[in-house]
Image 1 (cartoon, rainbow, N blue to C red):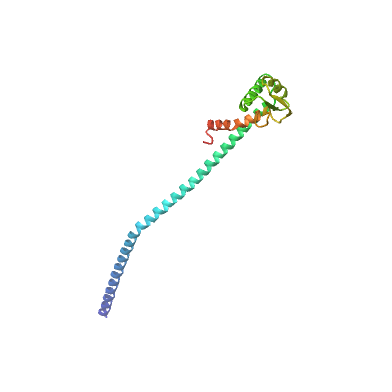
Image 2 (tube, one colour):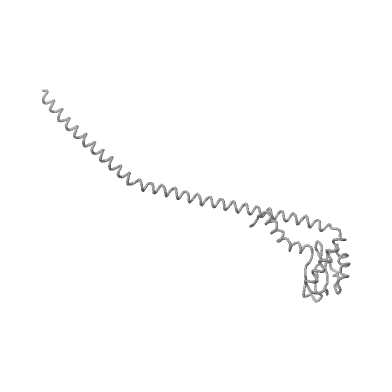
Length: 200
């Protein structure tokens, strides 16, 4: 009774050992294949990883440049607006002071200078001189030094100064304070911008 059982057990044991060896061998082969596949895949994965990192960096740099470029432009625009605002305030204050200036002494000398400049530019003293209502008397007094120049009966709207026209009407020169300020504005703006490093 024992022999058959013993024989059966041995047979079963052999089958189990053989099966175990096959399973272990299959597992070993499978593990080796997986390692080989993994080893082959690793450089590819590393390359993909590097590519993802590189692309990410490029995108980040692009976004950073856009943000910096945009903020630089915003800052520059704000600086230019502040500059323009400051220049306008200075001019506005100066214009108020000029409008309320006493029309004698230094102002009388200014009118003479404006007349002298204007007649030299036109190349003749044979001119008609236009001015505002406030400056009529000062201009009239100054004209005595310019033979052939006469004061127009019409007045013009300006802060001060003169507009002269040649008597043949061919030439006109605007030497009002308003026109002079407008001519100076770009130079003053440029000088202030340069001083503060704006718009360079």
